[in-house]
Structure formats: C-alpha cells, structure tokens
Length: 114
Image (tube, rainbow, N blue to C red; front, top):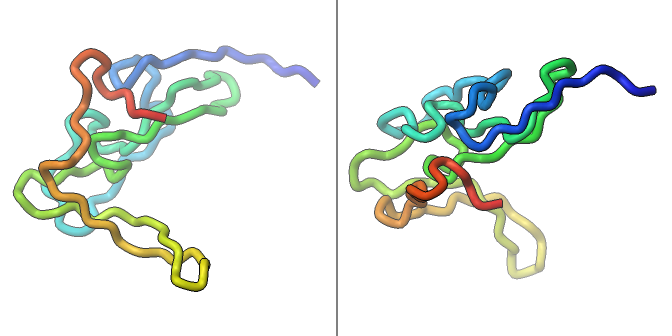
C-alpha cells in the first residue's frame, strides 16, 4: 500500500537535513576532538523521507564513523575483521597512523567513498 512521502536528497554534511535523527557519538577511548566534517555524528543522511524518517546514510571518511578525531600523533584504532589461519573471521583492532587518515576532498567536502 503506498504511503505519503517527502524524500530529500542530501549532498553532504552541510545539507539542511543531513543530521536529522542521527545521534551524536559519545567520546570513547582517547580521541581528542569532535570531527570537523560530521560534527560528532560519525555519519549523515544521504537520503531521508521527512514523513516516515526512513533514510540512507554515509559514514564519515575523516573520523571513520567515530564522530571524534585524533589531533596528536597517536595511531587510530579501528575495529576490523580478519581471517584466521583456519579461514574463520575474527574481530581485531587495526591501527592506522594519524598521517594516513583520510582527509576530506576539498572538491567534495564530507563525501565518503562508498
């Protein structure tokens, strides 16, 4: 059965409805400051229906979805999955050097690769 909808497309984190119903991420670990791209949300809406609030989201490439960034020289720990010698998946922490962190592209600010 069709329902009423008002779908809005968001071009990035600067769009008017980009952070509707997207919660702020709590600070975990030792990350230093709110992400300047996603402003602490870790993700934003790329498409949202303003009637039903169904949405599609993009993860922030600057903070890896954490909402917080490292401002010093400490490596950034990211949850990851690797295969064991037996071929089974296992959760692990992958450390990314601070200088290798994805910086936003000035031509398309805030848009993460999908």
